[in-house]
Amino acid sequence: MTTYNAPVEDMMFLFDNLKDNKEYKEIDKFKEINSDLVKDILVQAAKINQDIVHPLAKAGDDNPCVYENGIVRSPPGYKEAYNKFINDGWTSLSCDPKYGGQGMPKTVSTFFEEMLSSASLSFKLYSELSIGAYNCILHHADEKIKEKFLPKIVEGKWSGTMCLTESQCGTDLGLIKTKAIKNSDGSFSLTGQKIFITSGDHDLTENIIHLVLAKVPGSPHGTKGISLFLVPKFNVNENGSVGSRNGVSTLSIETKMGIKGSPTCVLNFDNAKGFLIGKENKGLSSMFTMMNLERIIVGIQGLGIAETAYQNSLAYCKERKQGKSNDNTNNETDLIIKHADIRRSLMTMKSLIEGQRSLAFWLSQQVDVSLNHSNEKIKKEADDMVSLMTPVVKSFFSDMGMEITNEAIQVFGGYGYTRDQGIEQLYRDNRITPIYEGTNSVQAIDLVFRKVLSNKILDKFVNLIRNEINNNKDNPELKNFSDILEKKIITLLNFAKYLEQKLKIQKDDVSAACNDFLKVLGYVSLGFSWLKMTKISFKNSNKNKDFYNEKINTAKYFFDKIFPRVDSHYQSAITGSESIMKAKFH
Image (tube, rainbow, N blue to C red; front, side, top):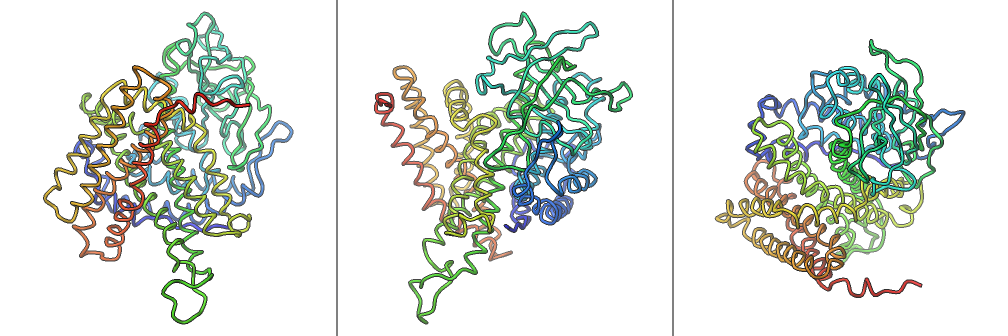
C-alpha cells in the first residue's frame, strides 16, 4: 500500500509568495483569506486525506463497487468516510455562503482538489461531480431551482452527475437521442440512455441530481438543438424533502481498469421528470460551465496522483539497495538513490510536479478573477486566459501523470509491477484522466483551432510571460533562465505561425501537429511558472536555505533537462502529415 503526506509547505510557498495577480487582490470577498487561515485549512485537509481518505484507495481497488438487486453499493469504509467528509464541511469549501458554503477562493480549493486526488481518486469522484453540478446550477438555473437543490448539494447530502455520453456519441454530442417532452406544468419528461456516468448511482447520498443533455422535439439539428435538464433520482417535494422515485434506473456498472471504487454507470431515463436549466436549445453552453471547470480538475487529478507516485518512489529509493554507485569506496551495496539514473527519474518527477502545481495556482487566480471581479472587461480578459489554459492543464497534466506513474513503476522495478506496493494502481487510476472530459487529442484540437488560430489569446499569454522576463532583466541570477525561456517562446510563436500558414493550404498538417503544439505550450507555461518560483527562491534563500536552494536546483534541472523537449515536439510537427495520411493500414 502507498503512503501519502500532503505537500502543505510547497502549497503555502505558492500562496504566500505567488498571489501576484493584481486583479485577484482587488476582489473584496477574498481580502480576509490570509495565510494563517489557509494554512489551518490545508493542515486539516491534510489530516483527513492522509488518515481517512488515503486508506480507501486500496480498499476500493480490492473491493470495487458492486451492482446487485438494482442497487449500487460502494466499497467498504466509503460510507463512514463520506459522512465524516461532509460533516467536516469539505464539500462546501468553495461554495457560496448563500447556500451554506464557506466561500473559499479557487486558490485554496485547488490545493484541496490536489490532496484529494493524491489520496484516493475513486473516493474523490463522488463529490467532485457534485461541485461541477453546483457550479452549473448556480450560473444557469432560476432562483427557485437554486434554492431547492443547491443547499443539499453544498451540504453533501445530495450528489450530482453530468450525463452527456450515449452509446453512439461521445465527443460529437449533436448525435444524442435522449428526448425531452414538455409537460403541462412546465416540467419535462426525459427518455433515453446515458453511458459512462461517473457516480451515476451509489449509496452514499440520499439523492442524486443528474444534469442531462437532451433534445426537445422540433429542435434544431446537431448541437444547436441540445437543451440541459435537471433530473433528480428521487423527486423533491415542495418543502425540499425527498419524495417518490423518479424514472431513473441503473442498467449496469462498468468493470474498469482503474478507479474501481467509483461506479461508472449506464443510466436509463424512462419518462423521468426533469426541469429545464437555462434556455431551450442552449444546453451545451450551460453544460460547458461544468465541463470546463471539470477539465481543469481532471488535470489536477493527474497532478495529485503523480505526487503520490513521486513520494513513494523517493521513499523506496532511500531503503532499496542495489549495485554500487560511481563514488563507492567501501565496496558495499548502495541505496539506489545514489545512482545517477534513478536521481534523474526523481528529478524529472519533481520538476514537473512542482511546476504544474505552480501553474495550477496561477490559473486558479485567473478563474477567481473571471468569476468574481466587479469589472466585466477584467473578468473577460481572465476568462480568456482560463479558456486558453484549460485544455493545456487538462491534457498536459494528465499526460505528465502517465509519464510520472510509469516512471515510478520503473523505479520500483519488479515490485512496481506487482500489486503489493500499490504503484501499479496509481498508473491504472490515472489512465482515465487523458480520456474522460474530452480526450487529450480533442483538447489539443480545441486548443489549436478554437483558442490559437481563431483569436489572439496566445499573444496575450506570451506578452504576460515576456513582461515577467522584462521585469527581471536586470537580475543576473535569472538571466540564464530568462534567456532560455525567451528562446522557447520564439519556438512557440514560430509553431503558431506554421499552423496559421498550413491552415490555408494543408489542414491535415495542422491536425497532425495539435498534440505537439499543446505539449510545447505546456512546457513553456511550466517554464513561466519556474521563472517566477526561482525569482522568489533567490530572494528568500537566506530565510530557509534548504527549501529555497532545492527550488533553485530543481528549476535548473527543468530548464536544462526538460525544456529541450520543446524543440523535439516542434521539429516533429513541422515535418507535416504526408507519411501519416499516405499510410495503408492493412
